[in-house]
Image (cartoon, one colour):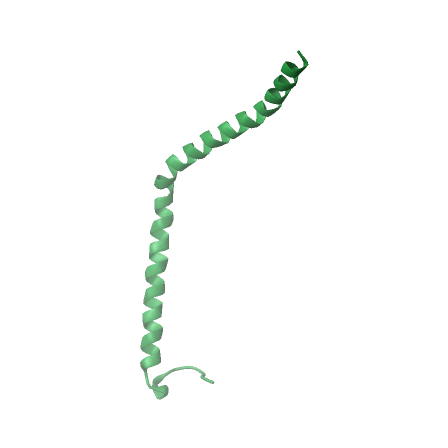
Length: 76
């Protein structure tokens, strides 16, 4: 009877962790299923930032092609 009691204690000591892990998995699946609808504004904003960076890169490249005399500002 002692061996059965020991295994019962081990099983009941792991039960809270198993339940916590199951609940955590349930919550992460629920959050992942809702993510695409919530993430679209973020993706749109990142696309705007990427387009602005591309515009700035082109503008800097055009300035670098200008002769030194036409550039405005201090150069070292």
